[in-house]
Image (tube, rainbow, N blue to C red; front, side):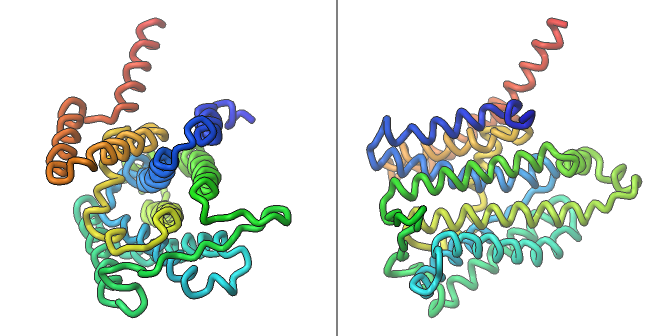
Length: 325
């Protein structure tokens, strides 16, 4: 109960997302909010490493792609034989992404600082190369051609049509909000405070007898698992899995969201996802100038403040409270 009361913003966010399609039933609005939620989960998962543990991964698109292709391939080849097909494939996406994170994390956490970051990028490019080269299985540079079947989801004896964008929207809401709650519990737990301590002074934590590398691998796996879930949800949202999900540029999207929204506040990447996704959608009509305008705005935001929006607001709020004491 104390946890819920201290995180009422998550309850308000849930209520808003539930009511949103009723107030704004336009399909384009529903689709963009779904994308915001999925990318917010991607960014929040990555921020377990960047904001809470102090290690920067440039290769998290690998787990996003593993989750996406797991869902896409399994639904294309096995949807008719799987009970509760969509929950089953999403669970498999999390498991396979977790296994990939274990393997990649085992090697990457042996390095530090920029070497860690670039090794994660190298592994991401390996995943991208496998997707491109294994065309008979992944579809190659065309992605999974033919779409992804979306079998009905039984709910107390009533099948829910998962081909409906509104049904998929509510599935995204349920899974992302539950993931946010779970990840918030982790960051507020003793485990989360150890991660903060590793971020601030890993040498001192080592001297205290805490195995820093073990904690880094564990949080790397947790981050990979939920990034894989985000990738699986994106595959359902787009009705396809594409090599762009593993391309090096995909790694930059959640990092931009974290930097814009804030990396020291849990809700920072969520706010960053809203801003970056909406800005990208708005600029989509300016195809030729989109990259230039989008990049210029992000550079301007980061030049104005080296911290994210919620980081700055939180610091000012603490200063005001301190001044009033």
